[in-house]
Length: 237
Image 1 (tube, helix red, strand yellow):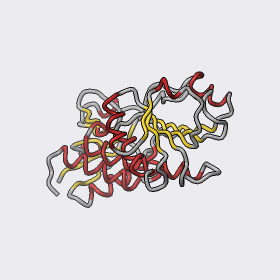
Image 2: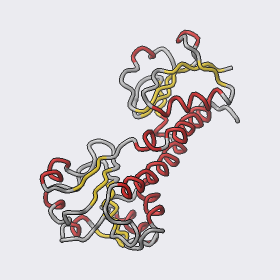
Image 3: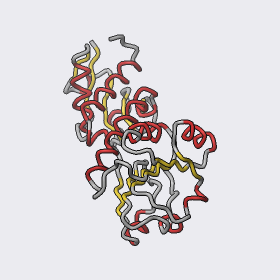
């Protein structure tokens, strides 16, 4: 039997990952010396105490550490949890429906593609803005209207904006082009793609939404963590 030690339960996903692992031949121990590996959440505060052990954690690097967020399984499933939560945030925080609304998606990576798929039943008015010509071509083939960032600065009528680009793309010039009642949801990792301070100064409704799977679907996300750990260890279920 493989034993593991839980570094912290601050990340809700870890508790569910623990339950799943124990149902599949692993054992959680309360003594670090008995552990074969350490399980931690995403963005753990400090792992120095576990440097002598193999560690599974998210968004962290170092010797003897496996960053499960870089795993293809984790990234693929996490994209679906994130997109689902983003749609929920949009419907809960706007005075208008997504149905027939004008939607802008910034970027067209993994999360943006899933989000596009989730939004399509609500509206056919979906625009993708991306610098990458391949991404724009893919988005167009998937039924979206595509624009470049040069076109974005023109006055627009988007009701919802979803950003997935993890570096600043909506600054003063771009933000001034949006109507005042737009709802912006920044899904990108820090520092995000939307200038928070300038958006606030313009009175725009911006919601910075990071780590959504842990907040909206911790059990599902935790099971994904556990499955990633199991696969990395070469255990067959």
